[in-house]
Amino acid sequence: MKTFKRLLGYATPLHHYVPEYVIYTIIGIVFGMVNFAMLIPLLNVIFDQVTTEPQVINHPVFSFTIKYFIDLFNYYFYYFINTSGSKESALYFVCAVIGICVTIANLGRYMSTRVVTRMKMTMLSRLRTNLYKKFTEQSLGYYSEKQKGDLLSVMTNDVQEVEVSVVSSVQILLRDPFIIIGYFAVLFYLSVKLTLFTIVFFPVSGLLISYISKKLKQKGWFSQELLGKILNVTEETLGGVRIIQSFTAAPFMQKKFGDVNYRFISVSKAMFNQRELASPVSEILGVMVVVVLLIYGGTMVLHGSDLLTGATFMTYLVFYSQILQPAKNISTAITTMQRGIVASERIFGILDSQVAVQEKNNAQPVSTFDDKIEYNNVSFKYDQQYVLKDINLTIRKGQVTALVGRSGAGKSTMADVLPRFYDVNEGAIRIDGTDVRDLRLNDLRALIGVVSQEAVLFNDTVFNNIAFGHPEADREAVIQAAKIANAHEFIEHLENGYETSIGDRGLKLSGGQRQRLTIARAIFKNPPILILDEATSALDTESEKLVQSALDKLMQNRTTIVIAHRLSTIQHANEIVVMDHGEIKERGTHDDLLSREGIYHKLVEMQEFK
Ligand SMILES: Nc1ncnc2c1ncn2[C@@H]1O[C@H](COP(=O)(O)OP(=O)(O)OP(=O)(O)O)[C@@H](O)[C@H]1O
Image (cartoon, protein in one colour):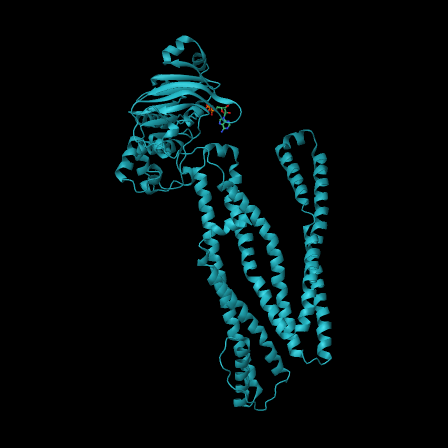
């Protein structure tokens, strides 16, 4: 219930929808009922129950009661017979009333669905927006624990499930009980005795029918498990065709598959047959109920009860049949609602997840970097094991610091803790003496530019990729950045220049072009501190040169931490920090370190650097 209330909260303010919805729904129900009520005069006319003798009926005095409207109808009914002297004109009149009522009833229903659609769309759009916002704000640690597919599935499937199950169930639960109440009121009006009988009989039979059909439907989703087995055997086979063939094991595998397949087929057959039984069984039971009603009510009519005429009884049956569908709808809505609630809980699970890296309430603004970055006794772990152990490092303004070491040594982690993609577990990182955790998060990140190995670009124009996050940026500044990054020339040759859309993740560009665009993006941002993760994959010499010279220009006049893979970068670094198993093992310049014949020396010997 709490989840449900919270979901409705996403459609607020409810008063924008509820009164309108109630009015349209009532119009739909009332005119729908009037429509069926027209059966009585219609049947009476057709079966000759109406005399053409002139009748004196006075125009009723207005009051907001059912009686007034019945009297008004009767007034006109006989008015037409009296003036034309034929019953046909009454028939036309009744048909005209039916036509008008059907139109109004359907208009009411249509308008009410429009209100629901409006409310539904508001709710779904807000849910999606909030999820997306959370995805952009959630810290990186969260994403290493969660599967991307699961998160996407929440954004698509679960939101859709809420749409299908919760919203349509709510629509039914807000409408169909009123329909049932309304129709029961009319049933009482038509025959109290028969309705008292129905009222006892209806819920008992309804529950019985829904119980039996649910039992039949429920059985057997275990065949999903068998389907899984079929997939497993197939996957195993596809991965091992070579082995299967070389061991001439095809017949063996075919038999293995055949067994699983046979079991799946027989279980599925039984399951489908049983499921299909639900519908005829409930239909037969439903008709039985009507048959009992027919016998009971029919006997009343045959015995000439004053209370029930033939036409009234038939109308009664029509009204009664109209109750069955909403009753079924309500029972299905309650079950489907459960599914929707489970889906919403998954959505709320994400929305409620704690963001590990948060800004302090009294965080300090910062806009410049003046002196140094310090790692003071920094230790960090993702899970159990420390990945950074008691790191102490000072990087002075304007310096290039190269981080080198074997794969898994902790270089990327060193870089990631600076812009607070993760918070350190022990020690502190300070920028100009202030702990990064005391700074405003956006200010801190504005100081730092990140150029990663993988050129991450977005499906947008070249311009928007360079001026990422600043669509209003000055065109000249963007072009200038592209020029410095050696990208201007190739951009000019693109179909629409800076307005060319670069496709999904920049697939329309070459590897080197993508990298130069990411460099242009960093140049445009113009941060004082740069974290550069050098690409390891080789480009062709021409492209490599362009990228390298772009990088050199990017690094000019900046403080750079580079996860270095190129000897040229390392040689020019002011300090090389050699990491191993999360610790700084050696530091110094290239020549220093070579002469020490330690880890660095080995790395160079093993040609780890290009
Ligand atoms: N998100 C994560 N969750 C858990 N452990 C991680 C995560 N990222 C990295 N690690 C582990 O932390 C250690 C250091 O990883 P890191 O990526 O910092 O090394 P690296 O020196 O940059 O390696 P490479 O040169 O291969 O990128 C590794 O043992 C790695 O398995």
